[in-house]
Image 1 (cartoon, helix red, strand yellow):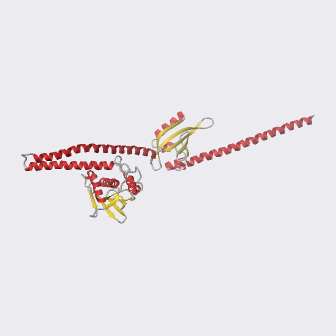
Image 2 (image 1 turned 60 degrees about the horizontal axis):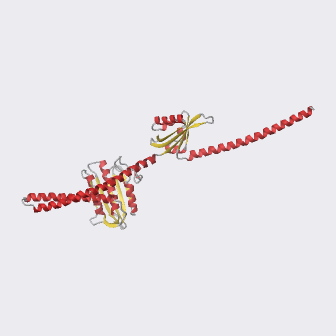
Image 3 (image 1 turned 180 degrees about the horizontal axis):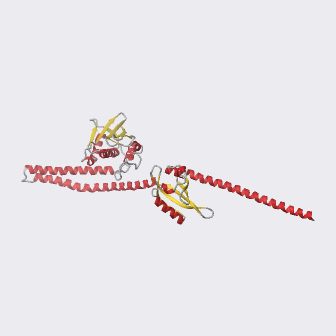
Length: 397
């Protein structure tokens, strides 16, 4: 009987061991599955951190950086080793504001800030749209913060530039309306001056001197009226959006008209414009309206450059050279010049070296586009302290 009892007990023990072994195998398989899942999750998160263009950062509960994505390295210019363990406020242009955002995250669990300014390693301000959330563990205890910061610097600049462009377009429409309105009183003045000439001629009792003086005065009124009408016509023609049309015209005459258009800008300055033209007309088969826009812009830029440098010896030289296949129009000034680092960006949209309110960054890109559409090429050479030369090359036909 004792033997039979030991046999039953041994059998039960073996069964229990088998169950434990099966359970152990099951747990082992689950652990392996969890390890694979954990490895995949880590690889997935690592891939996000490596490839995202946004700044993805993580801090501990004290605000010290514990994670810094590749996108953050590219945006701010810091390597991972340079930022780990440092407070995130160290990289903010306004640390106090960022601290207030972090406080909001601690109270509400998340925070969204549409425009937070961070500073790059070189000290440049970067505008970011920031989303911060609280990072918790399995027990729900807060262990830090996670933030996604999107660089919106270029978007903000484009938004501001588009507003500026819309304002310029509205000014163009207003200018065209004003030009139309001015033409009406100019017509009345012109008719009145003509009528006054006839009255003076028929009036008796005037001395020869008085008659001559009155006649000269009326002629001046008529001449200035014609001048005003020509200005408004040029303004309307300059602002009117017309389809490109090619025709034969004299480049020299067009350049002189462009200079006359800008005469008010140099009327009370010592700026001198020298024309180095051959005596004979320079005939070109192209679009005179579009080229006039280019000429006005380049001459206007030259006037600004020499006026900014000096008021005493400002000089602009315009030269034309004709070959068998093309015409070169060269605009040379003795202004301050363009820094070499800016010369590659000078033809980019909205890029300008002029102070606020003086330039839009549209003139040169539009000029380059116009010249390109006409089959030509626009180039520049500039030396700081010496001046700048723009060269327009247009096919003869």
